[in-house]
Length: 166
Image (cartoon, rainbow, N blue to C red; front, top):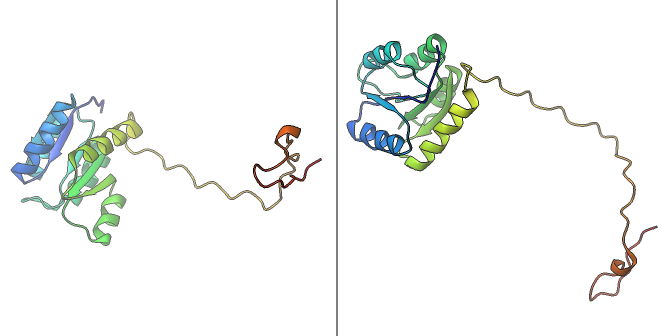
């Protein structure tokens, strides 16, 4: 599915939908805001979506279920927006395909920045591959030459102590 800059906001709280929608709209981002899982599914089939901030506690479905579906079926990155802060739920959301997990209450500026970062990272792909953790370099010391200290700087100021060097 081709994606543009539209955001599908899924939250059952009208106040949250209003504040987040205004913040995103003021930043020049198109927003479709819905209050339940069924409306989200309908919007996904009719709109091109670049990002889906999604509440866990929806009236008709646990938000983790649509998270997995949105990620898998529509190749749209999901950011969980929720009051649920149990570590198990955070891990489960991230393992279900969420790109980020933002706890309520949140600062709208931080939400905007994190949403833009997710869209940059995932542009053109369902879920960016996680870079492998680099291996630690071997314990072999490097053989860099000793630093060269110009004669005029060969003493520490105010201490009269020479700097050892060649």
